[in-house]
Image: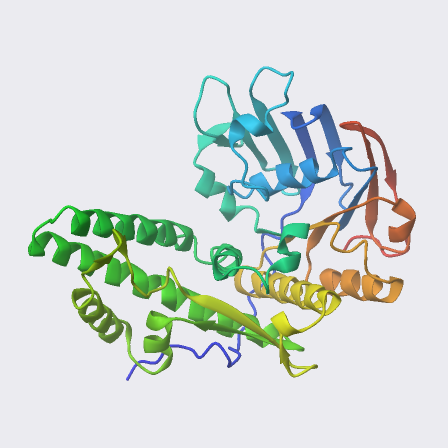
Length: 387
């Protein structure tokens, strides 16, 4: 019988040869948030430290970088809000990578969607993920373990999509199909119409659940002090030993037996209700029962493990964006963090108020940001140069 990996059990890998380890060499922002025009050169360094007062535009730089992965950005903002208030209504983000590839994301006031280009040719946003694998931590994630399950699903689904490019599309499709099913039930559509919807929902649901389970198991291989689990109706079917076809049949039966609306709403279990849990093995407690500082440490552990997983599975250098996530660590914890990130072969973009806090970060470029302008770029004098 085919079995799906248990998310509590680590998965072993055979490393791939080191190819396509891409980094950003330079990035140019035009009319992006409060940046009219600025350019940052990384000089081939692994750590780009952006410092300056609140409101200077530090997070905007990270948001611009995050869009180069084809995502909506770390703030998930609408495009018209990103364009500079007194600009022409559009914006652009242009980057040169260390293999001489040029990628860009841009938005025009005359358009309704973002557009992308690769080496000057039109491309889809999803094409960008083949060049950069980007993950981020912002102050929003500080409450990840105590806020709603929907926030954890969104966070982990974004990580899963780093390896399974179709995952985000399947999650969106599942949501759309669920809405169509609720509409069909409310409007008295015939049995055969709903049967067809149930079949599509079940197939998509099993694919979503399987991708989550696989990711949890793979991530746990690289986690030392915590473990990730995923729970849910369909996930439990797979974890208990059902193969995909069996889980799909069982979920179709579940959907068939639950075709009633409660207050014009459809009450159903499934991957749209699933949750992720993280257990702190050092404290022998679920992460949501630990202190705020301990939860932040677990979050950083997850990002480190994800970076190592990206490098192992794709042979690509992950880009990690830390918005105020490292500035509040003590010097030893910060040194350990950047050492681990260096071992994961990641390029890190981090923000903070005070540059002196990051003075001991190796292989770094320091960028001073003020009033939406890049005033200077200081290359840190370190013995540890890029490989």
